[in-house]
Length: 170
Image (tube, rainbow, N blue to C red; front, side, top):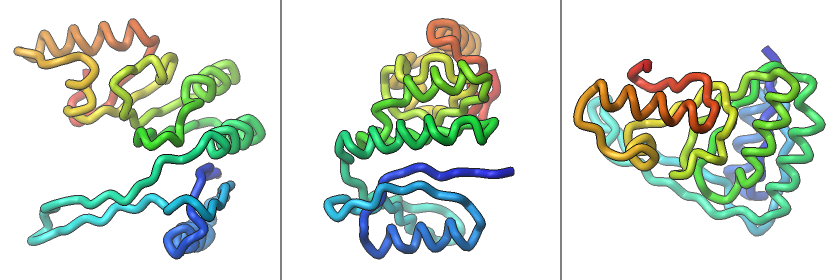
């Protein structure tokens, strides 16, 4: 499958490493390289095959990065069948709702790895993949599997989400 990676990265060591890895793996990329942005990176501290801690290094991006992503998305959408949006709530996905609308109007499948508490940003996505913490932030605490199922079904109806995938499948 063909893929295009669209992002804003820092003009730093980690941005260069990312572009090198994408190129080595034949993944097409469109990046906005910024002097004032540190490339997001995550360091996992592991012992005996178990993650002990994860350190995240992130910076909020500026509005021109979002405009770059949206314009690049519009130019690329017809070349792809699937859209994957990873939203880490660092300001880089302010146009998520518009991207989903564009993709769905072109009959593309949209998968979202969510972060926002307000799922309005993911309205119309085909699939969302929240972890437990993200789901609790949106629907609240549940007391039983039946209550969880009802809460998730209501969430899907409200935002016209076709399916949610996690380590459970409702």
